[in-house]
Length: 228
Image 1 (cartoon, rainbow, N blue to C red):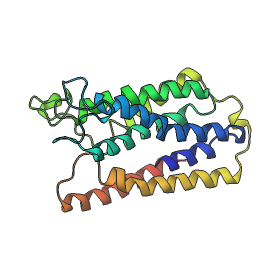
Image 2 (image 1 turned 45 degrees about the vertical axis):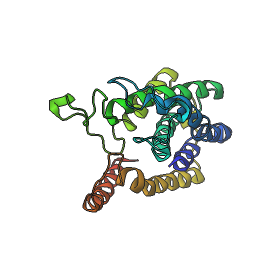
Image 3 (image 1 turned 90 degrees about the horizontal axis):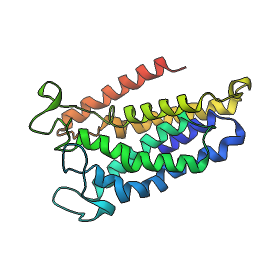
Image 4 (image 1 turned 90 degrees about the vertical axis):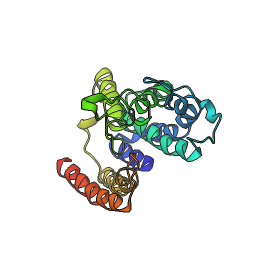
């Protein structure tokens, strides 16, 4: 999925900024992964209704509740949040500024929101005893709220603060950029079967898995219908 984000960004910017946007996507997976390892996974672990405090730098792992696969799974979602926002502020952000912002996003902002919804004691979790929102809690499938809303809101504010890309649309879009954009969308379509089709919410039966795959196809079709 990160490769798809990178390809979309490259196809949507001017050639002079290609190296910068590619480095930011590498930064999402590498440097931001380090911050999620040191702080983010701990802030997203169970403790109280607002924030976690266990497993800094994966200390005390493996345990009866968490293993290394839990970290890898959540790390993939954390860098996806940064990838969503990187495209929103493309061509308008210095590399060092992006490093600071994305590290804070993956090391603190996303983990806290994921703690609210996905842990057993988060204030909005569907797994806690006293449930929020009509005694149901927030039921989030495949990060539709935790990942995409967080990334979208942060990206929207970044774009509003930095303003438009002056001169970007005065240049005719080359054919190779269109090819890269379509390639990215197809890569993302394939990755959706893993991240969205299987879902971040645990699927407990093969019957449920089979049902989620057609749902993913229909959701992707609706997205393509609205894309231009």
